[in-house]
Length: 102
Image (cartoon, rainbow, N blue to C red; front, side, top):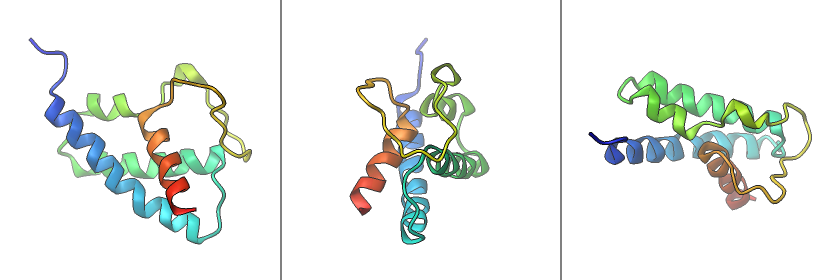
């Protein structure tokens, strides 16, 4: 018995990355800065695309999402992970996409 099907997990990660790119581009072209609220909106929209595709195990989708245990702020302050080494996969992808398009 295996814990995860890495092929499917990799597919979820890649599809999430593809979903994030145009969403981030839209926010950047609107002049939005990367605040916690904007990051959460982007993440929610991208995850909805994954869920609506209907071809991925919800377990794998949940793995790339932020854990509620971390209590990320829901504010209009700019995103700052500080020295954190535990960043949700989806948030890391959004942050990196924003930096690339800057």
